[in-house]
Length: 575
Image (cartoon, one colour):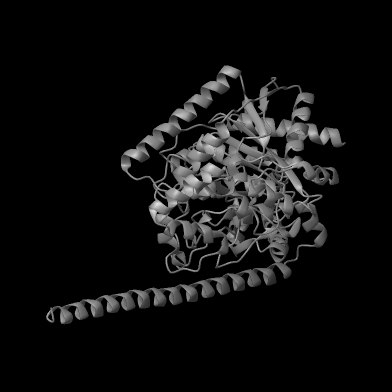
């Protein structure tokens, strides 16, 4: 027995030594990452200050700047192509405005230094194309040669891309001038745009409120007039949620309409509910111009050889035939607040006045089915990739619950999940994200279930003769900053079309009124998520309210047409 004492002592000492070595290594790594975060933030701050000085030294007058900023994208393109404006002046105008919006919202990460040379080349006639001289902003997930794509993570600092991603290559070939990169949530896996490197981005309409996520920097910049055309990504509403919070337009194409090659992946290998990449702008026509420029000729398909060649069909977008459009107000997961429901009804009336047929669409349990599928796909690996990405890094408060759930024992996750299901408390149904599939067989069954649901819904739409469906763009307008992560089930309206891989867009319809707030008295259920929404609605009068438009996959032109008809009908009503 006495002989075991030295052995046990040795094992204990070895184990303690190993723990100290591991903890010490993690501590040193966390300090190294903290230094990288601090240095990166400072470099970007200095780059923006340098741009500010250069813009202030520009001979662009305030009157000229104002003239440029007031133009729509179609008007700007025409003036650039007829040499009524120079690309350089246009760039300087948007750089100036972008910096002003950044001061208010913290929407920028860094300027793209090559923008000046690209604009000068446009003025010299060396870069012809449908977007010649148009400044474009990019979410910080688009790979750009010589630039980091941190997605809010210190481990990706000082790891610049070797080449531009496919979309940026095509944009440049079509004459566009990428000029700034915009802020994102840490890992892009949040509906609140904030990260430990660059901090939070707030709403230009009310700086106490959220811009949503994950393309929140783009939403804020475009809503503030600092960009005429931006590009983001969407895996659960990341284009449509910021568009809704900020009152701008966006399109989430079917996943393979535009290339994802060269963009920073998150949840790499998760392809059953794929990321979509798409544009944001102030009006629908600008989205159509962007999609046409990216897909109308062979440029994209020469770069992205794996994509099916599906050029933009202008004749479908410009068609005037009557469409049959469904609508619904409640998806069965989260009841949208009164202003969001009112927006759908106003959109219904406006589209009817434009000559379309609107019919009530009973979605049954589809909202719950698709939200369940979406959350299971997002957490199929039990959160392992997210934890690997954030290891030893500072974790933003918006990612705190994700980290906690990912570290829970699998059995505790299952217990928590079933308790949540029993009490029907959807706020925490996000726990499903981190349950993980227990085997490859289980994951294959999940993929098969998703495909069956997609096929069933497509057949249902065709049997009902639906060309499109309109519904709430989200559960509520912009909440106070930090609140949205507590009501994640409101994202079930957008996640539905990611799970189905349908085309979907978001378009402004109205603003919050005093009457909407009075109707909040009768709003709510025992679900605490509704309490969060109810608590945040006071003070929201005047905030933008969007409607979501969805179509079958590969029907981007139809989706844009419905959005444009809606926008034009609303404009005529307000004239």
